[in-house]
Image 1 (tube, each protein chain N blue to C red):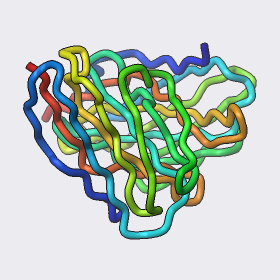
Image 2 (cartoon, helix red, strand yellow):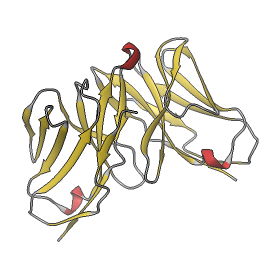
Image 3 (cartoon, rainbow over the protein chains, first blue to last red):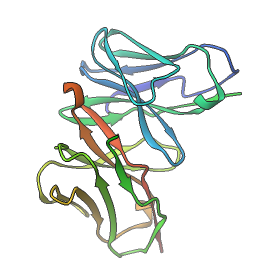
Amino acid sequence: DAGITQSPRHKVTETGTPVTLRCHQTENHRYMYWYRQDPGHGLRLIHYSYGVKDTDKGEVSDGYSVSRSKTEDFLLTLESATSSQTSVYFCAILVASEQYFGPGTRLTVT
Amino acid sequence: QKEVEQNSGPLSVPEGAIASLNCTYSDRGSQSFFWYRQYSGKSPELIMSIYSNGDKEDGRFTAQLNKASQYVSLLIRDSQPSDSATYLCAVNNFSGGYNKLIFGAGTRLAVHP
């Protein structure tokens, strides 16, 4: 899994609560990405980062924010979780033009 | 809207046969193409990358790229039940100067003994 960890691995939360997912890499790769995966939609990019404090939106960024204060950590925050954000979330890093994925976080919003 | 299209399947093949997975993309400017394998409940695993027209072989896997037709395929020779998974096609998108991928929805492959 290319030295990527995600935490938590599973989370159940209630509508309206804030949630933060963490992605950690053990090497100093510049690019990091957050995706969500839903049945029939494949992987969709939420946000990405091209360096410390440098982030940008992907195709499905509404309702999500990110932060990257250290090279090794990329945080994804759902400010006020909704049921439509129930999904599996994957973090990825870019290594020599190839993306490698973390193990994923299964988030359920009730 | 840049798109990557795959047949959702399932594609069912007998053990030992060749499985052929196909993908088309809309952005003519794409330069890099990737195939990921994803087992149920697991994360996507990169199995092939291809950057130029033609074939690229790695063990039982062959990736084929035709940029003129905007078509990329993955052949799996001597298919095994352990190859049963969802295969995701991904195409790079350098919009804004940053390296991003666009994924297809995936093709589910079932290899039966």
